[in-house]
Length: 136
Image 1 (cartoon, rainbow, N blue to C red):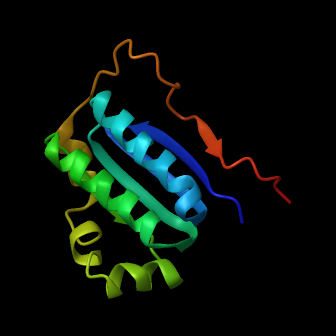
Image 2 (spheres, rainbow, N blue to C red):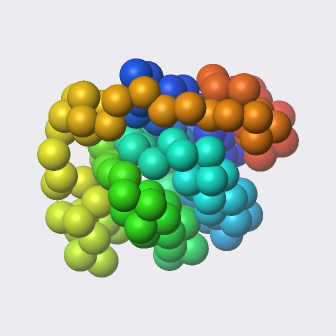
């Protein structure tokens, strides 16, 4: 299954929804996305994993990178919706308690307020990206 990312700003909380397989191919692009969000001061991030079917160590590294980037910028980073193999990976590696078991997303949204994107020339909020593989 091809990898895809959809994200949207919801009252100051950036929700990043991942679908498909997060492996070495799309991991670099995901790291870049997290860096871009931080540059644009979108530092309160909730990553929805409901539709993520696979994640390898390089994909996990990209998620951890997002956590560190957002936290270093004074924001919050949380995963939600992990299931199956992805949930097992998070548990076995010991990062689930750090990335998933944090305050509720609603609390983060209320505490962060609105953010200003500015004229950074980035893709508009709500855009969709996929790995380019044909969809069935």
